[in-house]
Image 1 (cartoon, helix red, strand yellow):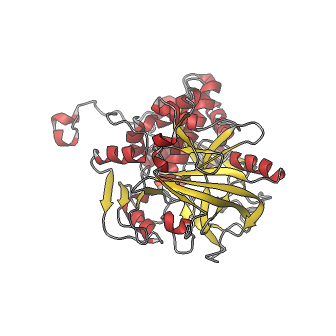
Image 2 (tube, rainbow, N blue to C red):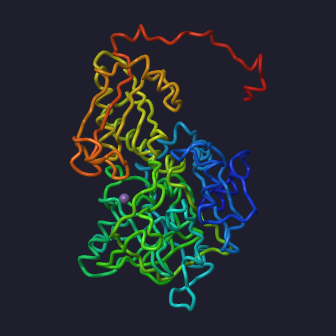
Length: 491
Ligand code: MN
């Protein structure tokens, strides 16, 4: 990589140098449903409603109601682009992240004059302070609210001093109020509950518009990053230097120094709000499984104390059901599965792909190498390890190493020619998975006792070891096609 990427601006500048990776528009666009509606056609992909496509990231230079601000969307909405931004071949991103977990580099603290995120400071005590005017948070569908979808939430355990960074669902609820939804078990919620028990507010910083390496690293979950593991140190490892943090202006917490925006606030003890209290639609926002999540009737509330930002700030946003979520959630999922299977079954798992249709969380394709007769059956062991490495995983498809796991047509070919439904489907019912999958409800299946419980399933599309010789793909002659059509095979 020629350019050093350490924040959103340097990432966008780098994308400008690569054909087809970034487009900009000066035509005014409304953050209320329009920006996401446009980007759906430009490059959202993932699980959004069809038609959509893989495409460039996009910058909106003229955001209705927010003079001087820009909105960037889809920065990580293609695996190829994620590879460019992390300086890695797209197929190897899972390995890069796995290695980064084992070689963490801790964040460093810089002084305020080294922190561009504090170039402009707005205090909540000032007359006219209103986060809805300060932050161009897009409303992704008309039945949703304005959400900060790419907010890096950072907090500290009041007892141990451990820290955690995670992206959460944040809805702007009023001039200085933001609701925060926690999927049960999230580390920041563990910290929050300790503060609440002590009757104290929890300081929390929300950094928006940062180095994409931080956004991907923040999506790791346990057991790869157990409680107390600061995921920022994974981003530090990717870049070879610690992420720069700065002391917040008002609250006793740190924030990402090179962010575009930082919201400083406190999670209030014993206060809950209804997530759709302004829209009254019963909906929250479009989520990664491709459906608009139901509103939560009573979730924690952040009281905002200050908003700081760069001059000419760039708001960063994403569409929940987009390829961007697939990469942010999926590449850490791949890293987690690779890490666990490499320890337990060294040399057998060649690669893993957290498939886009599951938003990076629900489905993994595992490429398994059977080298000797005892490897028969170990492919299923690899699938069981994958479920342990990432608890929200629902489906595993096992393929042999001559199948291109990133090519869904090839994976389905294996399903058609190397799979028999009565013997190659392994179901594990009654396991807790992820609450946003709408098929995980007692009404959907009698085996489900509670919302969020699911049947994990393995689709074993590998050839039994003893039959391998009957499953050789047709062998075409090896040639260099560039001799005949150089324009198609430029080196
Ligand atoms: Mn964590």
